[in-house]
Length: 402
Image 1 (tube, rainbow, N blue to C red):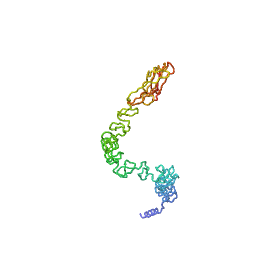
Image 2 (cartoon, rainbow, N blue to C red; image 1 turned 135 degrees about the vertical axis):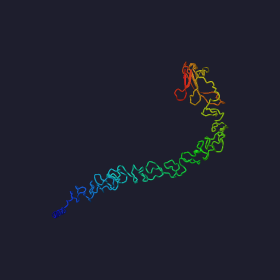
Image 3 (cartoon, rainbow, N blue to C red; image 1 turned 90 degrees about the vertical axis):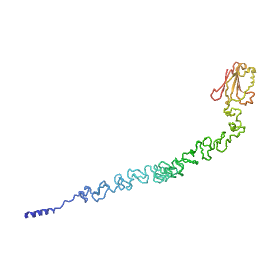
Image 4 (spheres, helix red, strand yellow; image 1 turned 90 degrees about the horizontal axis):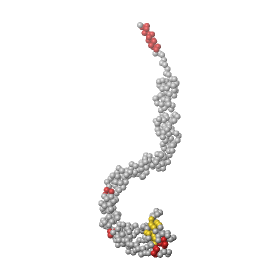
């Protein structure tokens, strides 16, 4: 058994003297597998500087780290590099902002029509007033009737008296007094507490615009016709609340002997009073409630002078008469008289205009306004006469027939 033991020991000892195989380093970069994560690229091995080449050069399982410092997903290398790797808002294709920087990395600053004229960092289009640096998005709103923060609302969010209602751009009609705002109870003090544009409305029972607390006060808040400044009426009531009853109504202001309380319906005109003669003037002269009613008195007409070629007997005034009309538009009735048998049948027409007169002094005669004679015997001009508006001008015309 001893003879076989020694050779076996020698055999085992001989095995321990064999050299291990050399590490494989195909790209000869000094790093072999498995440490070298890509043994085909000499620029890829542990400790190699990271390059912007889409490879994990330093074998740390990260590709191109250090080439996108602002983590915006765009590298400073490649075909479309990040022009500012310290600002995540600047990268190829980013929206251009009005900030003096090339946000979209196209080589132009604030391009695309963006201009900041007032230098407040907000370009026209964002800035609602690019001529005032105090006006731009994000600025604190000021109560001055201007939209400072460019949100489309003027003086919004302002409540200076802290009553919960906005004064600037809001419904608070007095933002300096917390007791005045919409919804507050109205107080009888001549002030619009509830901001409804009505003063002391809860204290104006007759809704005449005057309350018992107005200055001067309404002396009868149950009658809308009674309040300060109301016209005084002849009714034994102090209509204008001045402490005097029926003043300016019992006086005779026009000197015709009668005042308003005595039935004078117009105490500014001495020709208008009860019993006055009615005149054609569009007024109620006699204060009876009727305007231009028929005049009192009668009209007498004297004989008219005959034509030089005829005789009085041939005149036949009134042989034919027209209906009453208004030939001259004075509001008085006129008429026409015809005589076809005048002057051997030549005929004659008279136009007579009406006259206004008082009952106590009627005229003795009424003059003829116009006379038309026939120019031939047997013409019988005036056998038929009438007055009527033929041409539609509002005035009656003389119509003569035979």
